[in-house]
Image (cartoon, rainbow, N blue to C red; front, top):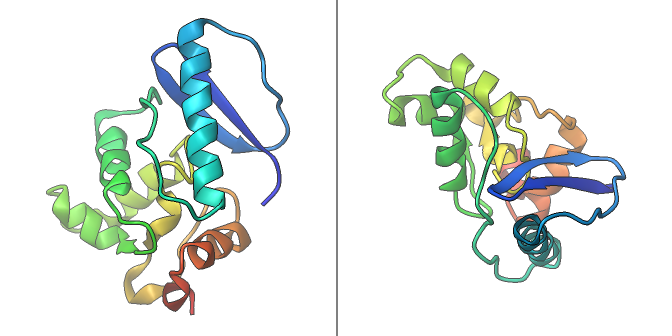
Length: 147
């Protein structure tokens, strides 16, 4: 999967992106958020029970935040479709808008945008590339969703 860089602030998790970054000292509140994020990621990649997510502090529109909250409700190892999420959010026909919000998710893996697929089971897109999306889904045992 490569290196991951976690960005935090005292209020919570701001971003997660692929690439090296390193740990920097911060406020005690930021350190607690970072420690929780690292513990969550370690549990995820080691197939251990997931602890609660650290608080999320990602910036986005009200609709984007609603989509991201809905993503957090998709169970580990399962998938949902863009269209189903749109309908649940009261936006029937809004699959494309859900896809755009999904693509702007600044906290992939932890806010599991990789668990969203197109109607019919096609992978759809993923900001970090389809190979990573496929790997994450297989890691979670959702191989039936990736063909």
